[in-house]
Length: 128
Image (cartoon, rainbow, N blue to C red; front, side, top):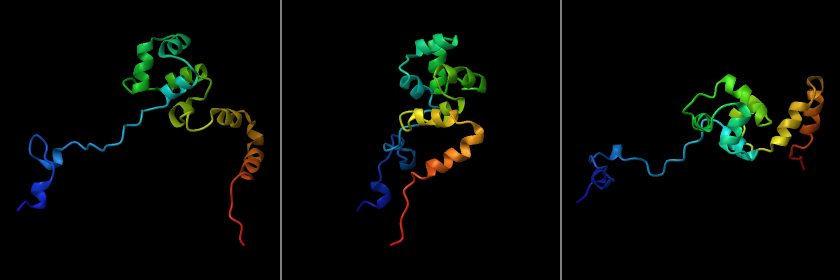
């Protein structure tokens, strides 16, 4: 009679804990550089030309093979029409970049007022 341990799927080495997880989630890219490049309709060569580098360097930055340093962020962001932090934090396909750009354009002294206006759009539950 098989025991629960013997009925587990085994790897080629015979050890169940060494079996690769077939249901692992796909890995998330190290940054959103590729998403922003594609959002702006550029291929790696076109972006490379805009910032004075090669398509291979762009591919390495997108994959994480090369570090997306502060210098690269400050060079690439203007070429993509966005801010350096957006390349790291925001996927343009998950959030409307125009909204982010509009918020960035609000003068610092008026941001509190703009935030209060935006909060009026939040759904709320009324007491009945």
